[in-house]
Image 1 (tube, rainbow, N blue to C red):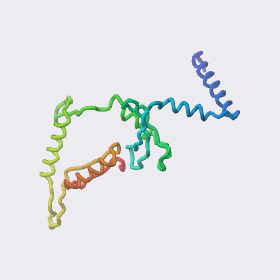
Image 2: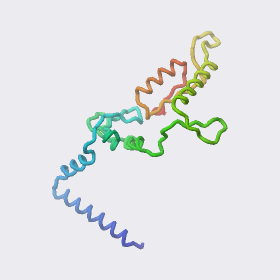
Image 3: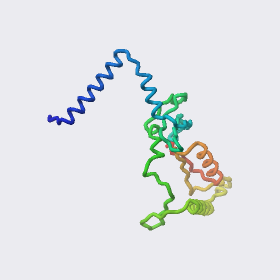
Amino acid sequence: MEVSRRTFLRVSIGAASGTALGGLIGSGVNLGPVVAQAQELRIKNAKVTPSVCPYCSVGCATLVHTVDGQIVNIEGDPRSPHNEGALCPKGAAIFQLHVNPNRPTQVLHRAPGATDWEVWDLERAMDRVAALLKKTRDDTFIEKLPNGKLVNMTPAIFALGGATLEIEFNQLQQKLMRGLGVVAIENQARI
């Protein structure tokens, strides 16, 4: 195996650092204050807001650190009895929900048969969804079964809640869908 000078230096520096750190820990040096100071500097001047992880039904508590309205860090809340400050890999990646440059920030619509996306304003998109929802419900609504049993349902609409949506939104969605007579209701967190 051929080792380049650069690889040799990297391995040597890593081994020396590990040995030095191991020696400090082994000799009884308390690194707690150093770690605490490093943590403090990382989130210095940040406003801390308690929140909840949006990914599953566990509801792990998080702490969101913001500086001038911008999220700079999201971590588990050690005060929570559910997760005691720990987060799963998805929860640990919550920060990327907010800073991902590929995240859509506007409504895109592609007409049937079209090859390109068109930017729509939010009001137009919501009006279109509402019109299609009403048309589908009106066309497929079943008030009574053939045996006379009252059901007030529509089998043509499916509702899927999202795990990255907060509990309050999912509850409102459930109430709206049940009010419309939708019976096929599911949540992505349970699937």
